[in-house]
Length: 126
Image: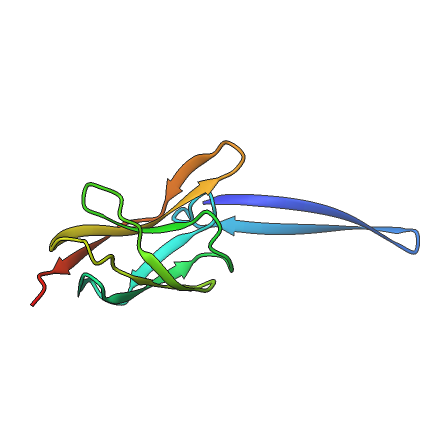
């Protein structure tokens, strides 16, 4: 567990007040502050909608939800909120086992990070 401290000095009518802010980070929170905790289902057909639950931030920015099968396939973002991302599985994906997660870029070193990856099966089309 990483613990970050922030010290603020506040002057109020000549009195100095020190304020400590402690932010304890769980080890599964990535460097850019995102975390994937669950997916609403672990199987679906190409073209279907799924929901990723976790910690995302209010705006998408440089975060890229993906479904990988050895190659990066971006999920189509339909709705973004701080705790839920609603995405559509790309139509071109073939049936089989994939990994679902979210990539992000952490500034200033411009390194790419990602969340934990969940197993996900794309089903054969009927």
